[in-house]
Length: 258
Image (cartoon, helix red, strand yellow):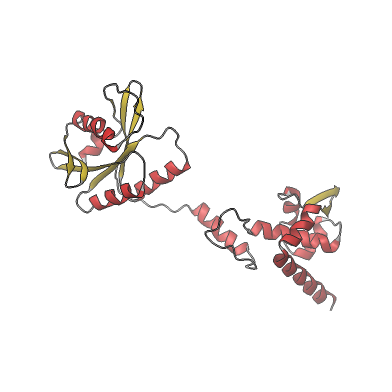
């Protein structure tokens, strides 16, 4: 649409305003209206429950206003898409662009909703079109997807991490691998990476020992590792997993001696 080409990055300054104690929806209306008028649009407010409608020739744009992001704003904007191809949400620009803000931007793009922000400055209000409601091209992040698949493949399945929990230690594939090595050290006593690897059959045994991410291993000398007190506590803390590896190693050793 010509609209996108007309002011994809235009920033307009409105008259100077005093400091507002509480910013409201209606405080967004005036600067955004001036912004659209500056770009040749006619603007009407509160049309059939729509906060703003801007028109120019065949372009009809619906804009929903809220001081900050919330679910109601998203639901209203999605509802407007039943009537119009071009729908924007408008908010006051947050002082800090944090992770949540970036996630909301991503959501808006996925929903093919445009975003307009208003910054309240000493010199006046600044209006900016952050992005337009263009068709969203979904791209799969194969690197992250493959990392998830690897994590699943490398887990033993002994422990099921309960989805939706917070502030709970996750039993990741790396933690399971470290526990397998800790149990092996507990059985063998001080040992070389090669000897530990022979028991665990874990290819990355040497790397895990060297990284010592949890502080469970102690490098005693050249090519020799022992188990720290933290490592022994971890074996007790994750007893279900530890017992699994103890049983596995016992069976493996028994089969080798037969």
